[in-house]
Amino acid sequence: MKTLPRIVPLILTLTVLTTIPAASPAASKNDGRPDGGTLAYGEYGRPATLDPITSNEMISLRITELVFNGLVGIDEKQAIVPELAERWEVSQDGRTYTFFLRKGVRWHPRDGEAPRLFTADDVLFTHNIMMHPKTITPLKVRYEFIEKVEKLDDSTVRFTLKRPILNALAKFSFKVIPAHGPANPQYLTREDPFVRNPIGTGPYIVKSISADREIVLMANEDYFKGRPHINKFLSKPFADQNIMTQAMMFNAIDMLVLVNPRDLPELQGDRRFVLQPYNALSYAFFGYNLRSPLLADKRVRRAFTHAVNRKEMLDAFFNGQGTIISGPFAPGSWAYNLDVQPLPYDPAKAVALLNEAGFTPGPDGVMQKGGKPLALSLKVPIEKESEAVKRVVLAFQNYLKAIGVSVKVEFKEWQAWKDAVFAEHDFDVILASWVFDDSADISSLFHSAEIGPWKNNFGGYSNPEVDGLIVESKLTLDHEKRRTINRKLHALLAEEAPYTFLWTLTNYSGYHKKLRRVAIHPYKFFSFADEWFIPAAEQK
Image 1 (cartoon, rainbow, N blue to C red):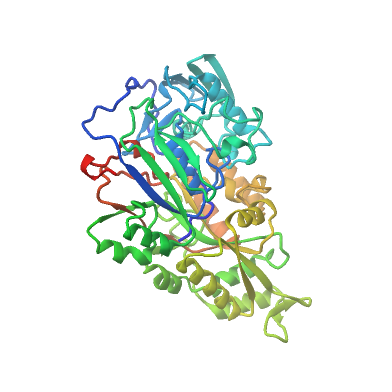
Image 2 (cartoon, rainbow, N blue to C red):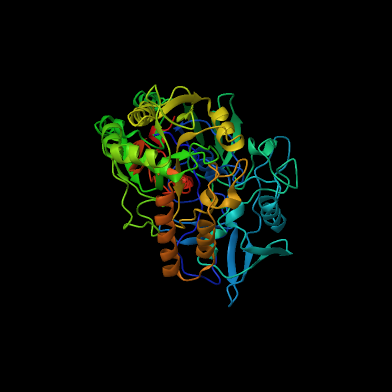
């Protein structure tokens, strides 16, 4: 299924630490594994930006895992580990975090320039530009808890929090960008050259980007954790999932980040490939523009959910490889409320709700109210969509037609779709998906402060009770209390239906067996890619 805009917060369960030593930077990993080879991987769609601040889609964020580092990272056991900070100290009251930075770390060099050293100035710069009012980023709402950031010296930074928060240390995994990177040192926009030609401290360096957004990344010989094993990563965009699978079958690419569920049997039967499951906390949904008078009444939105046979679609289009959901948190998340059941498929109930909202059949059979027909546009990115996405949107169109709702499906070029949805809010319905980590932070999706151009509350949903619960959830230091609050949020948003919540799919990556030691981060995919390798005999 198409990887559409997705949010990826990073909050992980941890034990608060005080002082953690880190290994010294090394030029080579010295682990006995060979260096060399190329990994070409397929992505479904094209990235709009490649920086970690303005990006709000998984295609882009996967690239940032290869190019940038945070002060801390997450290892394969989901423990907090040093990255750009070699150690840290936390005050007794939990409000002050002091990070002692690695020395000698260098930024990727730009053509014709010598590489510059990473310092505390870059950390302050990243925080300030991220929080600037004119920087449009989904990160801002997640870092409002920071009161101030101070540079103690070139290799020491102190963060003072407005209040102690749960799992604060993991928040410092945000990616650091160079102070000399963006053209505008005050705030970052999607027009800044840096967002398409970024430089970081990470294991791979962006070398070139073609007109069709094929991206070449080369190993960073100066990487502070030791040179990554694979010489080159090649990110290839595809507009059609079926073509992408065939490209791997014919050896044009080595890896699929997300295998189309319908293609699993074909890949599973081929001994050249490995299928590896990974449990991203994600879900798909139909999102509604609540600015439209036709969609402002929750009874209309609930009617649409009753009208859609989600089980039939999941079984027919995705081989039943998933779970139907009822609300704004992904199944498997600690915040998901299992007591809230998905609304059942019930076309009669759907019609009754529309009647209750004042709609009656018009002369052409389309429901109308005050002479205005219930006619909507469903916008889908990229004209050549995958077979599964086409089937989902056409099924939605037919299900709604059966209850007297006219839906016009409009396929849009990828960037034009994002402009229409996130910048201009010119849509009625979209099909999209979100990916989370286990922080279950939905503030940027449903808080009213996140309504606006390029913000994730694209549907304009506003409810003071939801706003209050979101704030209360973020303020509490009691995990069980937070779970209770999020269960209330789940029930309330299920009732309000700003989305028709669909399903979470079982994710599989597929890759050629020549790739070794492949470990996949469940939220960001490439976090451990510097450890992957290709045996010398299979390099090309």
